[in-house]
Figure 1 (cartoon, rainbow, N blue to C red):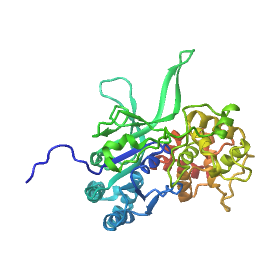
Figure 2: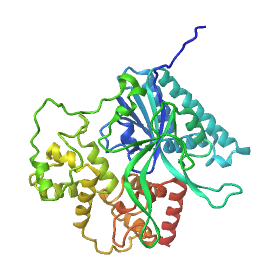
Figure 3: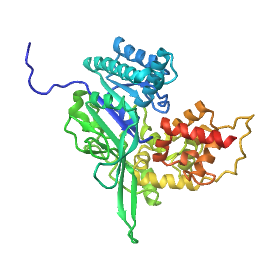
Length: 432
């Protein structure tokens, strides 16, 4: 047996989790040459290679396919862990002839679930040993923590998986990265505390009382997550596989920026940093814009109308016709807030919708519903007008508002399995 000294450069096991729509899949897509095992069926808006999976057997077959076939992929992304667990639960119950894990005697259903997940993680270790990074993407949930012999309690963010599966994933992963919005609490003139911010995103890499996180790579405790993202922060971990950030060539003459100059002259933009051209993914140049639109509930027709109205693209043009330097300024946080405000100001509140005819399904426009929410609505037969009424009653959206206006934090909690079941129950009760 030979003793090996020093650090060993090897493929990594990573878990990325956070609220709905914050950019977990976008971050995973920036790892070297990724292929997605799409359990959630939610990567349709991304320009990535994927293996669509509709069952636990599909997921296991996808891993075997990546393991046994010749390819150039260097990263496997399982998106998402909580949806994969659902498929695994159905698989275990189906094999045991049960409708739920609780129907197994003496808690054996939960033991079978743990065993199945452990076998799956071992199969992923084979990919890591072969030199492929493996990433799990997961949603998050909050849990109220009360300490014994202490007054008060606090919220703790954790992976939105069951108590059987979450510990296995966290133990398996070499790094657990938690992405969340940066929020500061300040005191106003009346002495009341107010939360401000909420748009800047942070990658947390170290465990605290407020969330689960870890890394063995000596990363900073917090990494700003802004688009375009400088992936070089992971270079020392991934070695030569790491993507290199796009930088300007200092030897080139200044680039003319007529579009940017127009934005600055008319007060439509705030100069945030010197820009020559936007670092872009050659396969999907508008990746950053697509993510911002998804987060803000802005649809393509609205974006086109805004750009045409400002003269940034010709009438009848496409979003892809935008000048690169206009794009570089547009995706800056300070400027994007102004764009969203302008677009929302042009929206006209719709006329009150009549109650749905039970004999005739109400039409749901996809552009008015967040994609992950739309999938759940279709699966459970929930009409848009019904869910709008529920959200208006709960004050999640204004009267006559759209489902895309549901705050991201509320949306992330709503689509969790236990919470969505309650929503379906409430909507069903309202029909009677």
